[in-house]
Length: 198
Image (cartoon, rainbow, N blue to C red; front, side, top):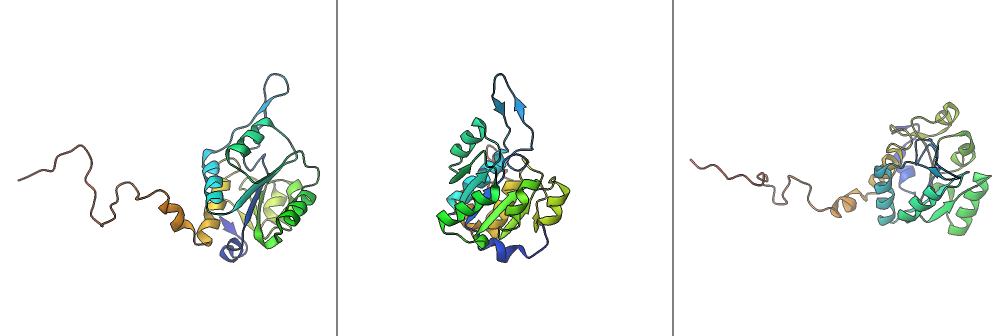
């Protein structure tokens, strides 16, 4: 992630990760199917990241100017705490969330990609945009992901926050020993083969 200010001091304070949807959770594409239905594609890595964030004690949520059954379903699958759709004024929605949760700006990471996100990016303690955001947003955000929207950008941000908060060791402990490693320091032999004897 490209940082215009120090990342760790800001990331350590984060308690809530809020996202825009189109262009952040997705690549911005909207596919219309029969009737009034629309489909969206979400990155599985971002989904894992949001699950890790919640399990590590962070709240997650989204604020979007659009609404979609696909977004509602995805937010439900991920157990997101805040789901605000068809929002006309994102800053007003953001302020209501903070008042209800009794959080300060410094405790919020907001990830956006377009002009409508600028007011919230100007307030959040950790304002992030994605690599393929609008030029004006790229200039305004303090943090810019290496990944584009809908292609792992959310996961990149969450990993950075969890590492800054010293929670990465905890995250790794949930998955046990990594493949090819043993806890006693010995190298693991490939399975299925016999050891040669001389």
